[in-house]
Length: 443
Image 1 (cartoon, rainbow, N blue to C red):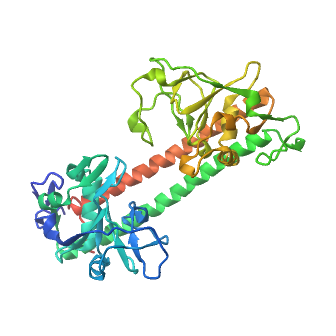
Image 2 (cartoon, rainbow, N blue to C red; image 1 turned 180 degrees about the vertical axis):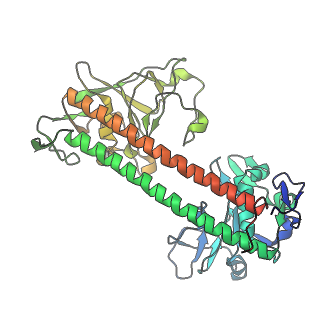
Image 3 (cartoon, rainbow, N blue to C red; image 1 turned 120 degrees about the vertical axis):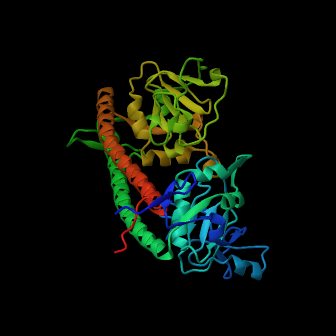
């Protein structure tokens, strides 16, 4: 039997059960406090845990179970610190951050047994007795997931700030009785836990496919595809043993640096540590990192099919790729072309140089004080030694890897799509129950 509904008059709520009470978010909140500034861990006996963004598990709306470093909290009196100590049921909402991918507006609920403060980018929300904290958490999750929170985010000098005062004063929620809130919380917690289990199993499967893919590549580029062949010591530590008919070369014997200016009508290609060189110009919204493009496209470097390209700053992470279409790349990339008379399939070289053993070698040859400042320049790169089979076997290996990668990537994509569908289901589930579109049976 369907229950009677009414128009809430609130855009994000829509129709709600007639018996539910419409109230401002502010009326659900007993108190709201800003967080503390914490210094780096000092391992002092009296240091207090200060929760930060890295400690949040936003998929489960809880804190991660991993151990958390203690921070030295300075310039706060004991009285102030005591006021900032979290209690079970406290909700933290992230109110500031940088970039479109920062989870400004997301919330987590504290349900731990240890003593902890919270960082200054968060506000702590403590609920009144008219609403269960877990229910309010689900309400705020639905409000965030459906992007209504974006109406209250302001961008200033690269930082996003959430106007919580206005949001809590303007926005309203629909509250059922405490008994029904509890039924909804119990139901959603069980359903979300089931979704988490299936999601984690699927993510494990994806990781296994990726490991299989990497193992296949390593085996192919260092041993070839033939069984029972004579092997020899390559004389290069990171390569180890190779088939007898293969040879070891310095990269300088095979490639030379190319530096040609780009053309206006050529696509700008990128190099990814996950997929190598793109075969088209990637739209901004598709990228996993922020790139600043120059208006003058002739400042880019021209590349041709068969070239080898790498990102100097991320070479030690595997940012290598074989060029498959004519285009141009960032002037910060290094472009290498096969030397005249040298028969080499750069697809094989890409696969070889993106193995974990090769990236460790790139790291060794890179220059810089710390990892994020490392650069692999051409004079160092060209001195790295690699193994190379005859050209026919290079092509055979490259074709095999391309085929197997395509098969495995297709399976991974299906599983990633399944995870996306699970996330959408969770989003829909939470919204429908906290707005009363669906009812949890009393039994």
